[in-house]
Length: 338
Ligand code: GLA
Image (cartoon, rainbow, N blue to C red):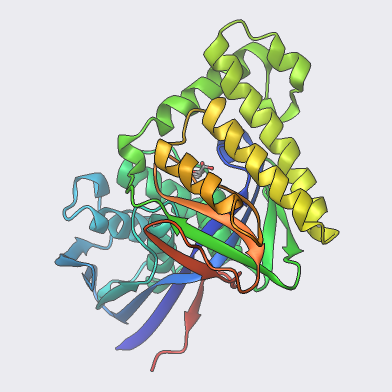
């Protein structure tokens, strides 16, 4: 029997939300909150117990209908393993330090760790593509590539400037002395129960009028007749530009400019994309009013979950339900089993 331990990090997105599924730009980092799957490999079933749910995952490695599996977390396990060619089953455990349903990519980390544990050979891009598809099969949500890719490809002390059209990325070093704070709103959200799919459909509607949003500019957006679709497109086009400016600001050590771009991003997600909540708005306002905080915004899909703030090191959040000071960490890997 071979024991393997696969660890996959969660992520926080510093800027560039709701841009990945139209081939746009994002700038997330893998964080030091992670999910670990320990597996004694053998057989064609996968039996995992979780520290967070009394109901275990007990599924065939080749599961035909992962979305029908119970408990719900086992759907991600079933979907990921069933997609890995030559996957091996086994018995083991799942542990995570990523808060679930907080917009920190806990489900992507679970699919990535599972895929590695059952034998995916770990090329970051192929692993990410497989896990994006697994998440879709498990949950029915047509999510983008950002979460599994940064979980697979994360680089210590760096964020990733990821081009979701060419699927290429550059590591952007975080300036020394800077802290990344993640603050939980206390509002748990699940993508399946939100308007994520509707927002995506609205972006597709905009693209039917003006072509790829990645190539569009403000003048093109202004030509969209429907006011709501126009606002959604305005967010995406302006957000792609902010990601580029943010990466340049970080590279130049200009944390004030980076912080201001985060606040602009939050406003755009709130006003044009309609994915913020009153609690998230208040958190952002209170954070940016704090000394030593350069900027803050909701992170991930929105509709609840977390905000991210850039602050001077040593500053701690005085608001929110729970908070973490996170460090940019390396991507998923198999660890040496004890
Ligand atoms: C979720 C999805 C991602 C991305 C973000 C919003 O995290 O899984 O693909 O679309 O929302 O940026």
